[in-house]
Length: 117
Image 1 (cartoon, helix red, strand yellow):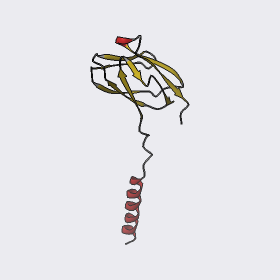
Image 2 (cartoon, helix red, strand yellow):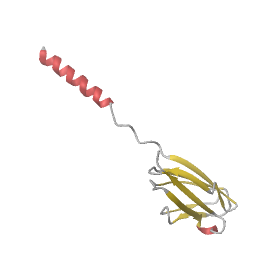
Image 3 (cartoon, one colour):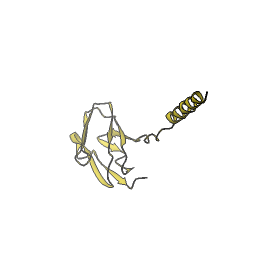
Image 4 (cartoon, helix red, strand yellow):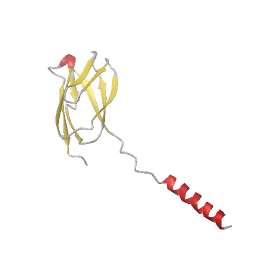
């Protein structure tokens, strides 16, 4: 009887421990950029340091554009009237520039990365 009781206690302890888990990582912040008249809106935005960020880029123009950033180490092609989603980061504090490769004179922007929360 004592061994059954011990086995029951052990099983309950394992079952309750299985329900305890480490906190899930926070969902990435999302920034939506709109491309219209070959300009990004917003052209400047801020994100916290040390976290991944999802960028949703909506192209309202009738021309293909390429989100390009040497600082962020990414290039993303978006078709006319198209939408693309991608991730940047985690990033260190600072400023990171980006542009539209095909309309670099007007499609420009900057990400400011602040201290993590």
